[in-house]
Every structure is written in C-alpha cells, then in structure tokens.
Amino acid sequence: MIKVITYGTFDLFHYGHLRLLERAKALGDYLIVGVTATDFDKIRGKINVQQSLEERIAAVRETGLADRIIVEEYEGQKIDDIKRYAIDIFTVGSDWVNYFDYLKEYCKVVYLPRTEGVSSTEIRSKAKPLRLGMVGYSPFLKKFYNESQFVNAVTVAGICVPSPDTLPELKENIDIYTTEFSKLLTNIDAVYLHSHPDKHFTECKMALEQGKHVLCESPVTMKVEEYEELLQLAEKNNCILMEAIRTAYITAYTRMLLLLKSGKIGEIVAVDATCTSLTSEEHVGNNKKWGALEAWGPTTLLPVFQILGTGYEMINKFSLKNKENRDFFTKLDFSYGKATASVKVGTGVKSEGELIVSGTKGYVYVPAPWWKTDYFELRYENPADNKRYFYQLEGEGIRYELVELANAVRNGKPDFYINRSVTKGIIQVMENSLS
Ligand code: C2G
Image (cartoon, rainbow, N blue to C red; front, side):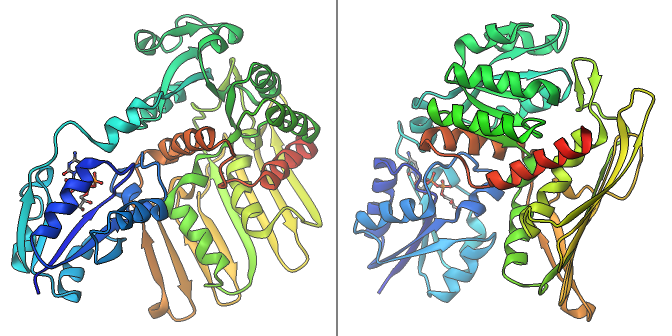
C-alpha cells in the first residue's frame, strides 16, 4: 500500500484544493491530509485565515478523498508524521517547489502543478474589506497603518488628525484626510480611536449613532455608565464596540493565560504587572499627554482582571503627579481575599516591565516588555522542572487585533479576547482613581 501525505490550510475550500487532493490521492492507495491549526498558521504569518480549524477539516472530509485527517500544529511536524505513518510520498502544490526538498531524506517528494486562477487570498479579497478610519494625534498611527497592510480584510480609508501637517506621509494613501471627525465618518465602516481618553466617549457615541463599528483604545470611556450607554447603542445599531488592548491578541500572552487556567502553577496568589515608558510618543492626545494610569493602566490591569477577576475587595493607590496635575507614576494594590495584585505604571519613571504571576506550585515569569512578548517561562522550586515557551510575534499584536475586529464585524458578534467585565473593571479603576 502506497501511503501519501499532504498538508494545507484549506481556508474557503475551492477547486484548486480539490484538484490537489484528487491528484495526491491518485499518487497512491492511502491519503493522509494535514490541516494546519489556526495558531500554527498565525505563527507562520498566515493571519488572514477566516475559517476555524473545524470548518476547514470538515471541508476536506466532505471531499471523501482523505483516508485520515490530522492537524499540523508545529514547525517540523511533517518529519514526525512521515515517520509515524510510514509515508511513501509527500506531495504539495508547485508553489512550494524546492521548499520541502529536505523531506527527500524520508520519502519521495512530489510537487503537483498548482491550479491557476484561484486562491483563498483572492476569494478573501473579493469580499469587500472593512473600510477603517483612524483617529489619533501621534506617530503611533503610522505604526497602526503599517500593520493594517498585513490584514486582507481591512483597508484604512481615512484618518482624522488635529492639523493638516500631522502624518502627511499617510495623506496620499487614503481617501479621507481630515481634521473633522464627522467628515471622517462619511465613507468608512469602522473607526479606530487613538485619541485622548477624555474624547473617547463622544467619538464612540457619534460613530455608533451613525452605525459605524468601533475599535477604541482603552480606557474606552472614563465612566462605567458611559460605557453601558455605548454598549446599548452598539446593540441597537448592530455595531461592534471593541476595546483595543493589543496584548490580549498576542499568542504567547493568550497561551500563558490558558496554562494558568489549567492549574500549571497551582492556585494563583498574586499578579504583579509593570509598564513604564519615558517617551510616551504613542500616548499624546490633541497635544494633551495621557497620564500614566490612562496610558498604561489598561494594559497592566488586563492580566490582573483576566486572571483574578474584577471582584477585588479593596484597592490602594499611590500616585505621583506633575505640575499639570497628571499622574506620571501610579501604583495600585488590590486585595482579593485569597489573592493580591499590584500594578505599577509610569510615563516618566523607568522600572522593570515584567509580569509575574505567583502560584502555590510555581510562577509565571514574562520578561520586559511583557505586554508585547513572544516568550514566557513557567518556573518551579526545582529549576529542572522549568518550562520555556516561545511563540513567534509580528507587530506587537496590532495586526491580530485588526483581524479580530474584521472577524467580529463579519460574524456580527464581539470577539472573545477581552470580556466586557474586564473592560468595565478597567473603566471602574479609571473612574475611581482619576476622579
Ligand atoms: N493549491 C493549489 N492550487 C491553488 C491553491 C492551492 O494546488 N490554486 C494547493 C497548495 O499548493 C497546497 C494546497 O492546495 O498544496 C493547500 O493550499 P493552502 O490551503 O493555501 O495551504 P498552504 O499553506 O499552501 O499549504 O506546510 C505546507 C503548507 O501548509 C501547504
């Protein structure tokens, strides 16, 4: 019996995939198809996959051509699989010619001519991309614009800046370049708000009233009741209101949370998060700088509330303010009864930007800058038990955040990365601490 194996993402299954599987099957008597796991695709740069792994496996199964379907989850798995299943022939489309020649050491390698004229990317791009407007007053928007170029499902159609000479390098790339927020809303489907937090509520409200989806930097509002009002408005107008904390969309961060929740370090006793920056180029709003808590509070509170919840019993605050009465260093301590948390934020103070989660069996260590990490460790009493995790990261999480915004709009329901209770918890802290 000649055993053949092939691999693919098989997103939005089309006849190019079908023809590949038919010819792969014809190479032997038994065909194994490896379908790539979503995270594996994300790590290898394929971030625009629209269908879930389950949907993509189902599409392959429906062809009736696969005698066995497996999931491809890690770099190098092909070698393991060829040995594990005693494969005679590895095959893949000719767009990969030579790329898998290293497998010739283990089995025959056949590159099948790719079917011209169809691809998942083309099918995806036929679907109208989400026209995104950006609002902000800082060079950070340029980074955000550059990241959007990696996301098929989104196109930046407009930008609202405080004065015509802000970010002129973006002017020729987009349709609407304006200093008026209302004008920006005319020809877009969604808006990304990186304006100063004290403008978020009015801008979110205006966008939602006009049926525009919103991706808003955190804190989304400075009062919980304002956020509740926005949620109702979003519901009423079938719009997505999404909080932009890009850390939440980073693979290493999300995997770290899953390991914690599976009890890998025992009961969680403490969460300690620090974020500081001297130059807050990204936190400038209409010439008004963000305070430390506004700039870094949401990021540091994200793991605290995602790990321990928002039901803390007490909060203590230590804050240093400058002559404009804006906090440049703030330390918050939370007590939860059986656990505690502390966050340190600074926009004029430097500290070690690490995240440490303490548990009864061990602890998680995420080195600085933990909020855009591709790496973390599980550490135990016996260092021989320590485990290290690395997940490729491109672009600090912004492009993944944009992919999730497009998915949320297409699916008509908010993404699941940041629970609304966490968003409310963050706003509650802002309201209590900054009032
Ligand atoms: N394919 C094809 N003709 C097309 C499109 C795709 O023959 N018009 C082939 C590809 O060459 C590949 C398979 O169909 O062999 C699945 O394609 P994708 O889903 O795009 O996945 P890809 O990432 O190309 O799969 O590690 C190996 C890769 O995962 C191969």
